[in-house]
Length: 264
Image 1: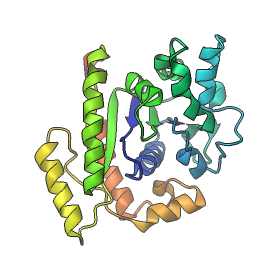
Image 2 (image 1 turned 90 degrees about the vertical axis):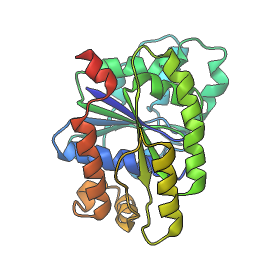
Image 3 (image 1 turned 180 degrees about the horizontal axis):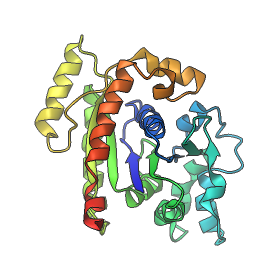
Image 4 (image 1 turned 30 degrees about the horizontal axis):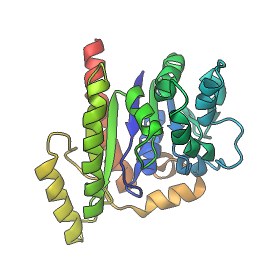
């Protein structure tokens, strides 16, 4: 099983779109795929018509069980998305309270990592959609994953968010027992604008070692797919954005993360 987290410390860069696009493609390619929404805003959950304000069972339940010192099987939190092979553990707004609780509760930093171990026999891939702020939720995702996918909108402020995330990663990787692969993915690339081209050049100059060598273009089909609650690959397999994500996924699947290579 492979576990990938999708994160950036800036919102609006395409994290949820990336999670849904890759998840839909993995399912279409025959992989048992689970997405875990740990963003209190619940954009991924809302994409599939689940309401983070009213859900009784969610990713928050994992943290709640640890706080209450009771066992919980994460398989019971998994819900179907309507797409064959693609499942979801949705988010709840209560996730926003975890940073206030983390100081007085032990063990909240490894909740997702333990849950992933329990899910290992049920899925081939797990994708974790993270909130855009550093806190206990992102720390959980980084502890649980073997690869971090960082969507970066090709504009100046998004690149600043990447630089802040890089600082966080330096702290986290020192505490990990295995390496963490990082793949930076340029998103919302508009070939008609100077800003997109200039931003891409900055990424190539300053983040070449981690940068994917292609781009995800601006594509209105993503918005239309979200309107009907379908993964882009199911809604329109021939959309140019879907084809770009397919190229990204081919590279990710063909190149196992460093932690997976070490394991064997």
